[in-house]
Length: 252
Length: 238
Image 1: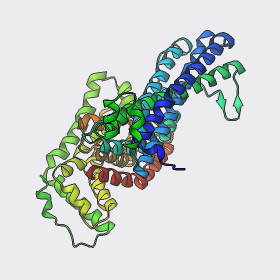
Image 2 (image 1 turned 180 degrees about the horizontal axis):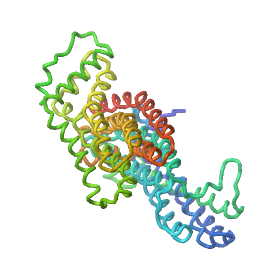
Image 3 (image 1 turned 60 degrees about the vertical axis):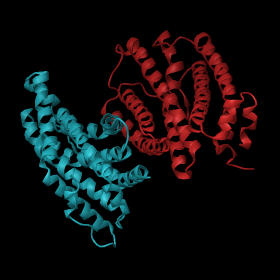
């Protein structure tokens, strides 16, 4: 078996094209189940009332925002180590989705904070580090697009991603010791203190967000591949004969 | 501007870390001495911005005492950031950086030399001046000392982190703003621990934990970032 078969942009383009819809279908199904449990099955929170239901979007988005930065830095490191073009394209494709999840986590958190804490924003550790994470995503996207030569942008942004990854825990702990209002986590690897229906709804939503992130990254990486490889024969064939071109692309 | 710097010629082609380091630090310090305006500009900016704050928020001594350390730290951050573009980009534009990379000296040597020179002309003056600014805010002598020690430990980290970001953004579009977007989020821990040290002292607590953490950051930065900067310079020259 050729392990590097799909590290070629032309083969991965078609793989991504056939996989992406399935991830979106999976995301929709999981989100439907998660939202049903979240709104119909899960009980009202004893302390916070109905407003706690923001958790079904807020917590998965916050998890994804951090997880996607790890994945992004991982692809960046792979692109620097193996000098593969596709890894850098994946890092680029993940960045906007990560930034969107970071923004959703901040935004939904603000609307959760208003009724429960009485304020949209406090300089709390988790919120501050999430805000810094948003800036890190913006910096990555800006640096990746700041060069005439896209490969140069790939490599500079990959290195920035790695520096940011090392910095992220430092930022997190620095702001945590600085100021903490945010409630502690209810979920750990040892178990949860939550009601089981709430937990299930949240997990389903987290999986839905995960599947959506994969699907969105795959769709975006297809655009990036087409943009980068616009001058190659397989893309020109793809463009010249829509429908048949895709099948012949591999031999180009 | 860099033509004058060639007064200190490259030594014979058997490179080592220390000769590369001393050559680069000597060259950059000579450059800074021959153009004192740029160095003084950064210091003037620091003093000016720190002096503008009382006019903006009011001259209430209690308030100034409270915000003093934080304001001085933010000003130091911005001043350190101002001098960053000069670190690599002038040498990159006129090709000096490429010549240095081709020199027999190992890259981390002269990169560390350049960073040390950058700290000596930007971080050190700010550290030395900070007690003076602290007096404007009515800080107590022990708080002034904690502030100066924190700046002495923190500004080298700013030089290193900023050096990495300025090397990454060499030749990029939108230079200054891009550099701010890259560097300022990474400065957050230094700002928190640095301002925290002085504030702890002002509140009657020990600044030692904050200073220890700053020292740990400095050790980590000195160990890891020169190599990251070398990698970034190589990417820029590729």
